[in-house]
Length: 440
Image (tube, rainbow, N blue to C red; front, top):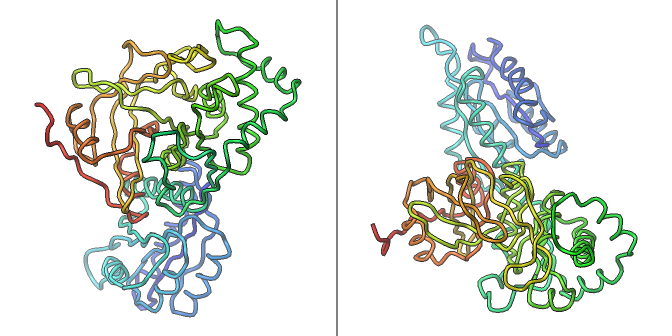
């Protein structure tokens, strides 16, 4: 639950300070809270001078907020604004439109917002703006976008990831930590094997009785996958996600692929990234925070007309399934177990965080009713890149021209604008399409 604070600022000489405007705004926020999924954790009386603003700022800090709304009910000068700008959380300066357009100027709030946004003030957290009346439909839409971005910001600044074993061999682009402030702890691959050896047989038996997923695989082979799931769940405690070097050592030593274990943990809300892709994991954690649904990590595999086929061995949460899922053997190793499924149709969006303060944001529509490979398959069309509609071949050209790593984190829903906002909050430049070489 995102914790939101609200501080109105006024200049008492303006008649708008006495027109019930801030009271109406606070009531609107209270009404929106359950609908948009936030808690109005702090709401102050109007700050009219620097001393009151400093007191409100101190109270806001103690409230442990995720987003602070500072509302220009009327014009206010920098001495009232700057103490609140020093609160180290994402902050939105919100100006109300004029209550009347005749007679003495009631508020001059937009001018106040203009002044406040122009102040040069170093901040460790994002500063954005909002303009509109509480009953204007644009306000809840903009607020929803800010709240989702705040969830992503919180996940990437307060989160904690576990990176086990480093990158899979030859995947040199995965060797680096995410270029973000999220905490990343490392553990050797031996930690997995040691934990596997400590999982009691009765826990494995109990978990096997809970599995409600069709499979033709012998129960003894599924035991290996279940034991791995329990071991990874133990290692994941206290973390927001795990990136694991899932081959080649794991199937050779433990007799199982990690895919089904990843899928089951994803069902329980634990993001798991294949092949030691810690940056891909950070994107999955951000996507899950923004959408409040599990994310999935896929390879770009094939161009099919104006669609792209994304695939991975069998690691996706069941929430993504278009229908029934099955547990099958890995497509080229023949060991258990992977989840076989098609992605459910609907809008999807994604992000990839890159070196040198860059990112890519992409989106599309998952289509239904087409063939799929063994494992997880999704056919995606209506493609966009950085807010621009592009063809399937232009998408591929952009991936290759920008030299994007081969894992794509996808989240449910059309949240492309939120991801673009989040990248701006993180100080990342969103790369535009680069379609040179695409066949048209």
